[in-house]
Image (cartoon, rainbow, N blue to C red; front, side, top):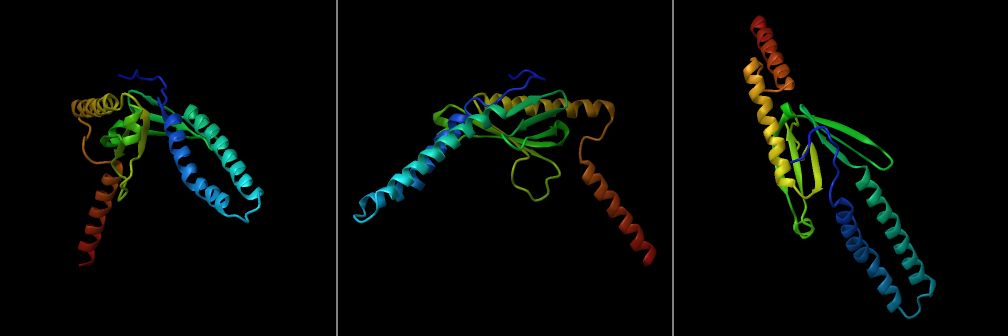
Length: 191
């Protein structure tokens, strides 16, 4: 269980990104290097240049994946989930528990190999989006984290029920219902 109000980062995000990186670069750059080595009249500097470019790209992305993983952080508060991250362009966002409609865990074959997974948080008011509003990637306790988030959502709903606040609908939904009622009133006036 994660402590509230304390920032935490992904456990293996840099390792995952580096694994994806090495696999991608080997496929993308390895083929041209092998082909130029097999061509008899190819000048020596073509495979050497491609190899140098590959090593340079690997070094840059290796550094970037570590810097990015160090910049990513999440914090569970009493009312919301906060996230931050970015190497050059920093971003911060918050997702209130009152807007969360679903939290699901995901674990692919590579993340399973490293014993980590992710928690995708969906919220109300996303419209037709099928992507998560917030994804917490590369954490070892992803199933417990999902349960902790959902428990906070349930606690918030219980508190709103006790105080008499509405527990269903979002501000957007309330606004849309008010607009719909206004349009109906105008229609009645016109008839």
